[in-house]
Length: 125
Image (cartoon, rainbow, N blue to C red):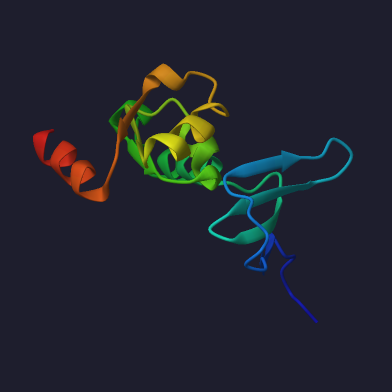
C-alpha cells in the first residue's frame, strides 16, 4: 500500500505518436496532462515547479526578485510565470513560441537557444 498519494504518472508514447509541448487542463478533475519528450504525463494540477519555487523562497525567506528561474519545456510554464527577478526560456524558436503562448507575460521571459547561451547569460550577471 502506498503511504503517499501519487502526484504524477508518466507513460512513454509510441514512436508514431508525435505530440510535443502540449498541456491540457481539465475543468472537472484534479489532473493535467502534459506531452513532452515523447512522454505523456498525468500530473495533479496542484503540483508544479512554480509552486515549488514559491514554497522554497518563502521557507528560506528569499525575495522572488532575487530568484532566477530557467526552463526548457512545457512543464516549466508555471515556474516561468512566477514573479521571479529573471526568467529564462532555453529552447529553439519553434519550442519557444509554443511555450510562451502559455505564459501570462511572455515579454518578461528572456530567451536563449542553447544551454551554452544560458551559461554565457549567467556569467554576464
